[in-house]
Image (tube, rainbow, N blue to C red; front, side):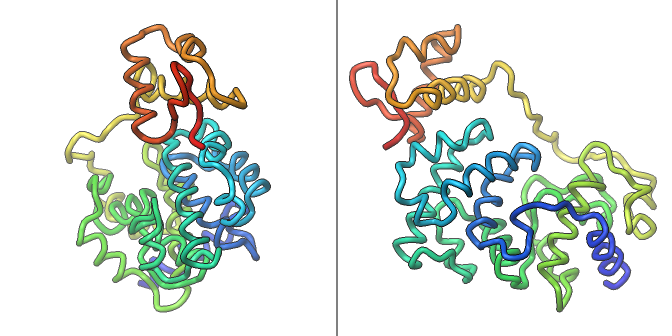
Amino acid sequence: MNALLEPVLDWYEANARDLPWRRPGASAWSVMVSEFMLQQTPVARVLPVFDQWMARWPTPEALAAEAPGEAVRTWGRLGYPRRALRLHAAAQAIVEHHGGVVPDDIDALRALPGVGDYTSAAIASFAYQQSHVVLDTNVRRVFARVAGGTAYPASAVSAVERRLGETLKPLERADRWAIAVMELGALVCTSTSPDCPRCPVRDICRWRALDYPAYDGPPRRGQTYAGTDRQVRGKLLAALRDHEGPVTIDVLDATWHEAAQRMRALDSLVADGLVELVGDDLYGLPT
């Protein structure tokens, strides 16, 4: 354990990024907001939206008092906008059931809308310095390479990974360890261009020792975007965000040339609660 623990912690102390949700005195709410925003989204895109969000809604009460459509509007172009609705719903639940304070109990966190195993462990660890196994994509990739000798982990978290996480978790500074491994995966042990010469544990990495065997698991999903329904949904939401009130169907029709795909995307936004039909051919963000 020491062969892995101390080098990674020392590397983190020297190389950690200065991020607002990591600074001394950062609120549990800021940690929670960051975890929602960082899901499948790089830090560089999150930072400006995070700053705007926290300036407007520094507490769960502030967000819960607004219409959910305002959360969708401020979410902007971060992608996966259902996260904004879930964060709004979580803020309402925090106000209703926890007196406006982000709970420190992991089961209470897991019961909040949009909070699963990873997010609850991350909030409890990073906001309240508790000892939990935190398995995000970056951590899982580091573990797969250093301990497992494989290029990538499986698509879903396995029981083996959880046991490994428990085995590697130190008795003290577990929250610091979790964020350090996460940072190592984000900055050095990256998905496509790992910078092995900079890695503090390169000498004990099984993947490196085996001469970097190629990934031979199930096909990994790509991130195709252009021309997809996701892109059309984004264009429709952008048109709605740019208007203070509801818009006519003509405004939405101008966002995409293919009518069938446009209407399919619009129907899916309505089904997801991201858009409301507020009158005959009149659409708006949720109120």
